[in-house]
Length: 263
Image (cartoon, rainbow, N blue to C red; front, side):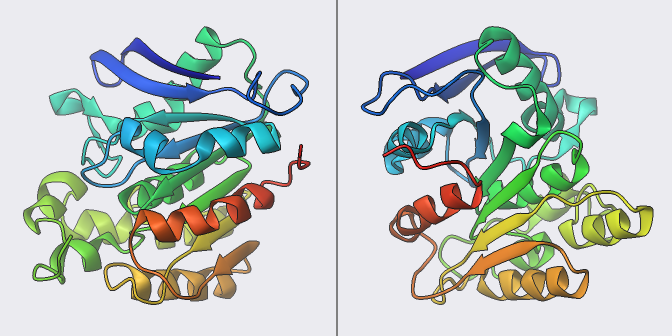
């Protein structure tokens, strides 16, 4: 079952649209409620509707018995700017869970049933938000994540698909904030969690070998997870920064969530 919903967000101080897929009457046996839920964050220049139509999330939801919620990304790298009523990270990482659980009582409230995922910029968001709100999410899925925001925004201006360098200061907050803040930097977040003895959700990550935008960043992040003994699985192989590659690896990601296959 697919629904598009509109609700008021306190974090963004306005109405927001988001998409919900429920594993109910969609060609597979209905699963027991409450449903495990995957919150799936879009990438740069992409809204939730594009994700819904570009990837077979409805089929995966039915097959694995997992609800999927997709908000709009809005090109803000899931950062928080309360001074301009744009706390996108707080909305996508925490408030969206609260909204959807109130509107859809069939969604599980348990941490072990709650997951976060994202593509590219959304992968950056899923990494930093999943680690920041570790008490809410039990697993993180990263599709070609832009985990090195400084590399993506500052050093690749001539690559097709690159993002304006000015966004690094305007949205991320500049190099000092990025290098020191666990909320903005997934590398620092893992380091800080280990130092504080906090749990780190298991992480699944994929990135294509021809993905010149984030390939090196993903290799660095994989090595960082190895160094800090983070439970993770990294998938490599041929592919670029596109829906063809993400579609090919979508079911692997759903399997990582550890849910019983329904078909």
